Image: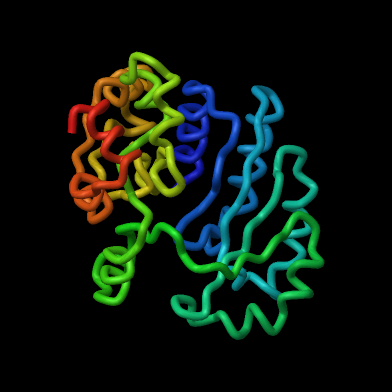
Length: 237
């Protein structure tokens, strides 16, 4: 992603009323302009209000600690979650061996719990073990999105009845600037933040229906869990 695309992605989020942004990847700190991006987001959030977090595998340690210290000084930066997992992350042993040093850095936490909702992204899309893990999980990539639900469900009180753990997706802007209603780039794009009018993107999102093309979506359609059955009824699935 380049800076122009990142700035436009931030503007779309602010137009939609977002107050919490997540800078993720892949591994975001591999981007050579990572800190520049975070400073730009910080400037926008200071003006409009909000906070942002970063997710990372922690492999910036120890070479880029100075950069992390600079990041921690940004007013709207609320923290970085370093995630690692013995089963899926090849650098797990390294992170664990330095866990106290990493956690001692300001605004950094380390998480090692099992993956709750593996997504059809990156190596997970082509790795048989990942697909098996996803098929056996109790969680969903369900195509349920907060903005979409608010626009389409007549009575918002119903939302609390089927927004169970692992059923919500967050909107995503990918590295090309394409906007998806889920965290999977496999989901259809509703427009590009650089080339398309942002209100047009929002209108397309507002009337969209779930494509259910990912593994989690297919699992969602087959679920007999009561809250999911209710969700399918309300959404006409």
